[in-house]
Length: 164
Image 1 (cartoon, helix red, strand yellow):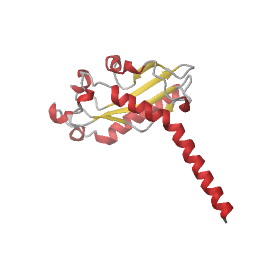
Image 2: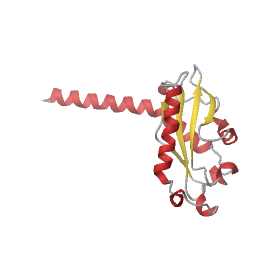
Image 3: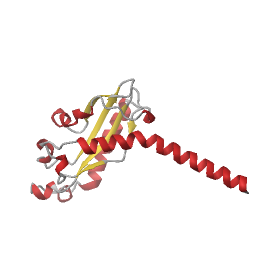
Image 4: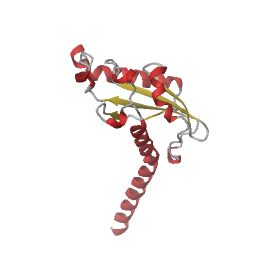
């Protein structure tokens, strides 16, 4: 019984350790994006821009080479140029891969800009979720090896660290 307990605990320990090591690079990356992203006026003053589907391309060293916002123009993608040459942790093993993640902007801008909320238009979360999945599907058709993070980075419009 002691051997079985030891074996089960060992397996649990190694699986938890492996999981935490594999997400270590991601956590640092998410922290880096959250800390350094400045919300440009094109985003903070646009009532229709609630989220960004960000697609990155890495080189053979795992450094980010291209940054694109799949659901909008290059103008808004310029606010993410600080990501170029950032290297997501070695543990993530992202050499020559596409990476897709989501940036969400809090809904307080609807109050400050007096925008019509997506809930009032009828879009709401279901429509936003459906649209986001459409971009995920398109990216996976383009490159099935794309790494997708469904954990969004939520940026608060009221946080002074995100103001330009």
